[in-house]
Length: 146
Image 1 (spheres, helix red, strand yellow):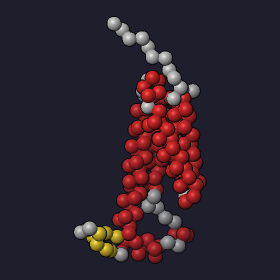
Image 2 (cartoon, rainbow, N blue to C red; image 1 turned 90 degrees about the horizontal axis):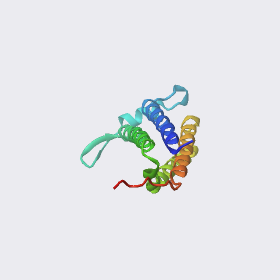
Image 3 (cartoon, one colour; image 1 turned 45 degrees about the vertical axis):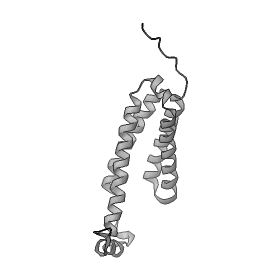
Image 4 (cartoon, rainbow, N blue to C red; image 1 turned 120 degrees about the vertical axis):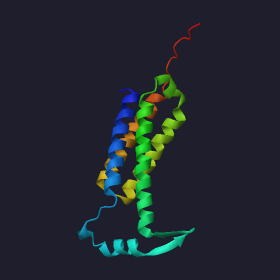
């Protein structure tokens, strides 16, 4: 397969991950027994740099920020998938940084989360790593026209 195919697969997975995370990160199950904790997070107010906030506000900000980052990553992966091979070869640093970023997210998911984000993180990391590997191969440049 070509690097562009792996980038396009990663883009679709990232879009699904973004939607799933954004819709699901605030969900809780009553069986978890966290109602009192969540109520406390929502009701405990404090001032931070002139703003009145709660821990729930900070939790939501972090969750929505992750969703926005995943959406940006999906757009980036899709755009990388549309670049010609010679251009991708010139962007090795970006390609490997992207793959390493998701490798780190995979480690965080493995350590702190559960099966769905772990599976998505692993699949995205594998796609981005394969794309980075394939895009780093030298590609002959077409001759310039006079």
